[in-house]
Image (cartoon, rainbow, N blue to C red; front, side, top):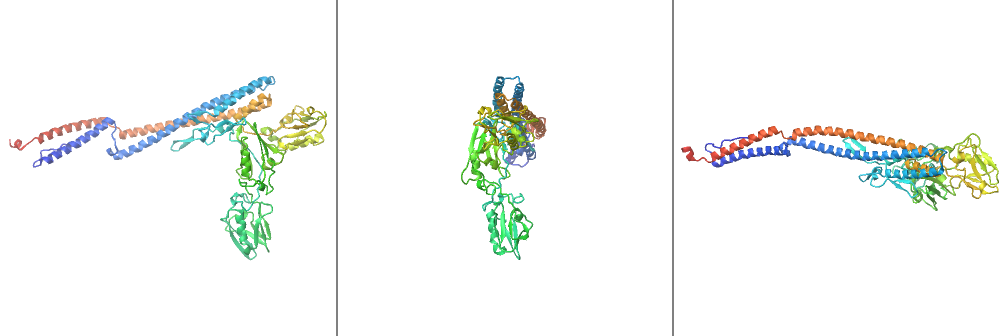
Length: 638
């Protein structure tokens, strides 16, 4: 701010006017800036007002905007987790109610009609549990994972519940270094909803010239390193580069291409599991080049000279293109097929002619029985996954040996008794465990003490019968009792001896005979452990007046209750963590806003004083300019 004299000697009128105008314009501009500060309450209204502080202000504003995003994320996550907590609270109450109903219906004084009525209550709780699983918050299914736009739990055609969500729960960023989930896995809450697998056998497919090297486990189960090998036959030797070989056929071709030098020929061994090398004359050795492991991995490393070499098993993996006929070294698999039962759904899967593993798996998956067939992660065999909770999966034979060979039969003669009844085993007592009455009225007892497998049980029954009466089912699963005596079928039965539960656990007690044959139950189903399965078991046990089943289902529900309570505790801890983070961000924002205010906000005392001064200066300039501008020569001469 300046007040310049305008009555300069020997100065033109134009210059005087220009100087006066410039001075007043500058004062007006400064006055306008102060007016803006007083009006907006901000010292800096555009970066050019103070470039240095303006840059700092922009950075602080960006920081506040980012933190506001974090606060919005926290608020949304807290609301979602609050919905989860409310859902878990309801599910907890439901499971407690189910255990109370189970406890009230265990005693021997409870009638079958009373249990039937209780079953209706459990069925209602079962349906409510599905509703809890499909809880929504703001249009999002809170247990659906990253498929939160669709119901995660759907009622399957076979009467169970299928989980179609994922366990990939959604996450969000709540601070610069904090990424946390704001959902809970449906699998975690309701049990093993992702399925239970069955499958055990190593199928050991034969190799062919088309078998890819990356589909081999290698002789040491470490895969195949593709490098160089050296074949030496007397004084002659050849280095064979297999670094770009893709298949067994490539390996054979490259070894045979050097036959003129090494006199060694390669082929697939007769067992179909390895490579065979043969010398036309003399002896040969196969060694590594450069410390690699190619010869070892291909099962043909041979440091001492030999005339022929039958290599080690290269452990071919099962792939979608593996032919069923190539399994077990080319021996193939019985084509009789599988009998699959899952809940109320049943299917028979067979195949004819050359078929790949992929085509066979597709047939199983297309049967629509709530299972998924796949190659296991190790690539050694097949596995079938039960995808439906509340159902029991049983895989048996269809008159042949297919399921047994593939290792996917759910019950077999070699199975341990301890594995039956979902791992609860077979309960025996000292002395006889079952009494068998033939059709002709004669009977015998069987002591199952010492039996470890289903096959052992069959042997003990036949020994006690003095003939081959027991066998294992050729269709489906279970122990089959066949009576050749003459008499009514109603006389042929298996009953408990000495109050033993062994016959019941083996699925034999009290079953009717047809044409002298009692077909035992499959007591080794594969089911998904969890809320839906245990509620369904309790409902069915109440309907059938099965006290043992009621007790077992109640134990399972108690385990579910503990798991849900635990998940609810974890959810509460997440909310507390978010609230703590929210408080810290809020405190940080207060400090940042204070700094921002000190840089940006107007100091009203200073600004008002400055405004008053500038206003007085402008008025003085206007008066002075007006007076001087009106002077003439006559004013100076007078």
